[in-house]
Image 1 (cartoon, rainbow, N blue to C red):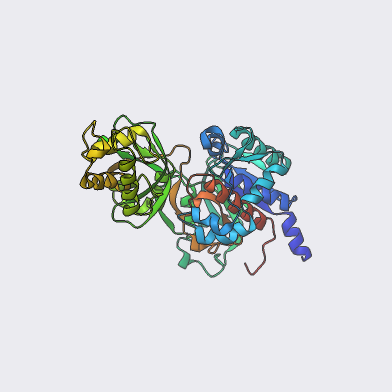
Image 2 (spheres, rainbow, N blue to C red; image 1 turned 135 degrees about the vertical axis):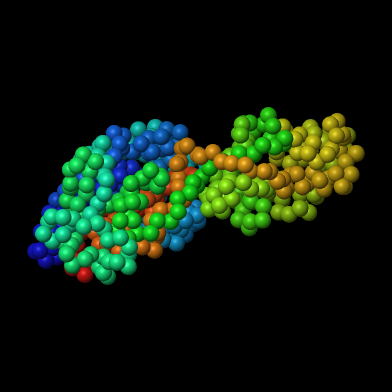
Amino acid sequence: MSARNQDAAAQARIAVIGGGAAGFFGAIACARENPSAKVVLLEATAHPLAKVRISGGGRCNVTHACFDPRELVRSYPRGSRELLGAFHRFQPRDTVAWFEAEGVELKVEPDGRMFPVTDDSATIVDCLMRVARETGVELRTRCGVTRVELRRVSGDQPERGGGTASALPRNGLSAECDGTFAVHLVSGEVLTCDRLLLATGGTRSSAGFAIAASFGHAIEPLVPSLFTFHVADARLKDLAGVSVGQVEVSLEGQRERHTGPLLVTHVGLSGPAILRLSAWEARSLAVAGYQARLVVNFSPQHRNREALMAALAAGRAKSPRRQVSTACPLELPVRLWEKLVAAAGIEPGQNWAGVSNEALDRLAGQVGAATFPVSGKTMNKEEFVTCGGVRLSEVDFRTMESRICPGFHLAGEVLDIDGITGGFNFQSAWTTGWIAGKAMAKPMTNDQ
């Protein structure tokens, strides 16, 4: 490194906008990589890491015990291709090691989710706050950002980020700009920095999208992801709280299918299977106004209709004198089974011996391909995940740096990345934040 670059690295001024998981991890990674850098973390509210604190029902689902990057990316409806290389650099195994090095032990639950052994999200929040202090990160709360501009060479009259990408020269800066940023705060104060990390999250109220757009970035439309379905159907009446261990769900007319547990709620259907489907079909459901037909296979272990019919026929042969509604040959909750039997037109009190093949076929239809009307959604309040954000092709995932504006980095949900429930969204935040932080700690070169 030349003396000039060494001096630039030592004097680096880094601003991080957004005090969430990605912002904290990026700020810490940067400060550790370059202890001489001045790193300022700006949080608009009085409560940094708020989403970390409430996630997982207050336990914080830190990550997921999936340590194969190629398998891991399959849990991201958007961003899987871009995250593959990133996960080869920092993945759940690295997240576990990072927190364990800071005295926080994580545990794995049967479904692969990982939580602190304390089952308290405050453990994660306190850890990140402590490490930020120890590494010299300056945390400023109640410090909203109104806009960010590129500074002119003269140091006065900053100019905006450039409008559209095509309006900027190849290196993203006009000849009149010196490559530093002017960060305008709600208070009227203006901070100057050499590098900037945008990690403001993915909610519609986020100021991050306007900032990214001001530098010429395209914003993919924002729509909710990870939500439950409103379903009004006689088959679900009085079943709130009933769960099925494994189902397969899809939207009528669509090829996308997802499996997992299902939960009946007081307004419809929820559970991992529904949340997964909502994530992959986020855009199509938004276009349809959340009106759709949901197809549920309550017995996906039977690979086809013939196998299911055979299982029902075997149950009929085994218990001919028992009532159909009380003798279920499948692994289904009794109350749900009773509803499906009634929906198949089988009379109460009917024994198996009196069930015709035609009735058996109707019952197989109710079990293997039950169709429910979806009339709306309810957001999963533990996740607050949004589909959409800064277009991924405009970001270099080796550094999380903008391909349009050098020195401008992005991480977390401000990007068009979202994962399914289970710790995957936090993992993408840790990964992109870490990569951005490491990159920002290095000196800028003239050819960037």
